[in-house]
Image 1 (spheres, helix red, strand yellow):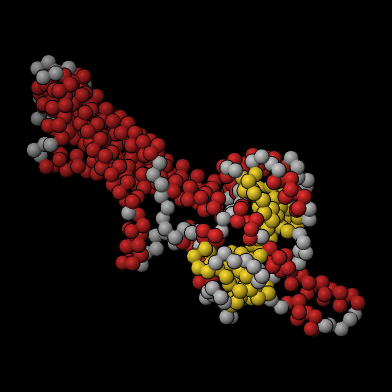
Image 2 (cartoon, rainbow, N blue to C red):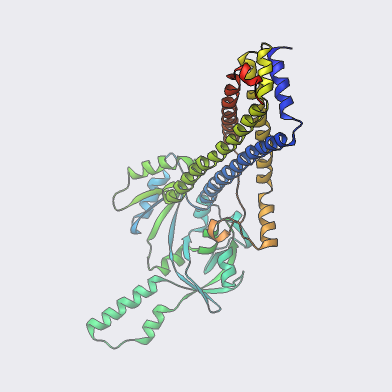
Length: 428
């Protein structure tokens, strides 16, 4: 029997001992490693999926770059012409965006409107695929509501909603100031006319899959947005689609070369930087914290090996007395720890990947049976738990776990190889 086969044979023999106690602690070590790896795989997959799905939702519903300022864009046609000539720009569209008050059947909400030119906006942000009811129709006094906003208001396709704008309030305040200065009698009819809402017919309902958009946005024609905010022919900004959304920074740099203050450009990353940075930081912190769980599992392996070493002290003494080398003794207990690490890694990988695949079914089960909402859409902005398994992340997790477990097994193996055969034979 070769040195390698000798160490492997005894390692396997010690893994299936006659004593139930040793077998139980070996199984506990394997389960500990498996649970730690599975937990790390699930958490990293969900965090990665959350970040990438959020990016896809943002890219799918928001322009890649916007040009705006603190007020309104007065020279937007000229800026639009310049932007369309840039090599990395695919399409440009004007927009009006801001908060309003919406009323329907005595229900009032304060969402945001986005006034767009339907044809130009479709080239920048394809809204048509998000329509789940009605049509993508923004002719005349039409409006498209987010699905959660429509559900909250109780409005459906064909209903008429009333929209009040801050522009109306500004007009009322200006009229009151004029009356106060000139001493005229208040004209109730004129003031009432100023605060009358704009009635819009619901032509469609969209659902982007992100709660923030679906509960807080309504899409209106550009002229309606301009009327609500008393902008005349001006707009709040320009929405720009880049050839590559991940190269939006290049488009921003090109635009800043032609923009003059107070105009400025922002990418979709700039608009959501705080959120993406928070997710990335949380992901890194979770990786470090859960790696500690693997280290704890490695200590379980070390404990198992130390226990086995103590139990096999006389065997070690006999083997060394018969001429077994220290490398052979190290090999026995090191291979034993490696095997525990391998099985723990395999089981953890299978369990982790499997749980990622059934995550939404498990979440629905908890919700239906126990009433426990694991992933509230109103908080996380997704209707389901996103997850994406990245092979590189899985390889790092499994590789790191295997190395940590192997190192944990090496220490007791080295201690076992240093036993004096005479003292070992005297054991008990």
